[in-house]
Image (cartoon, rainbow, N blue to C red):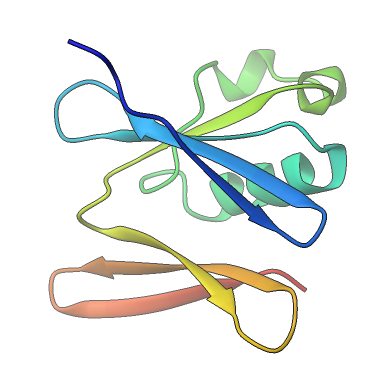
Length: 103
């Protein structure tokens, strides 16, 4: 069975997403500033945005090249600001919703 990958381009930023195991999705980027933002989102919300390695073993060089987050697609949505190149996430959990935006 073929795994479907989706490419999302917003201005100069590009993400890829595809299913990851049962009930999860992987969100991948390969632009350094976007990778830094994604890693900061993980640090603020590690229970929602998982990375593939241990935080203790993580270093700055891990943000060069390809970087991925694992999310529950039933709880996390990617937001795109119309009229401006703004991105963020909407996290829905237990009837509560939180928005995480890029600055």
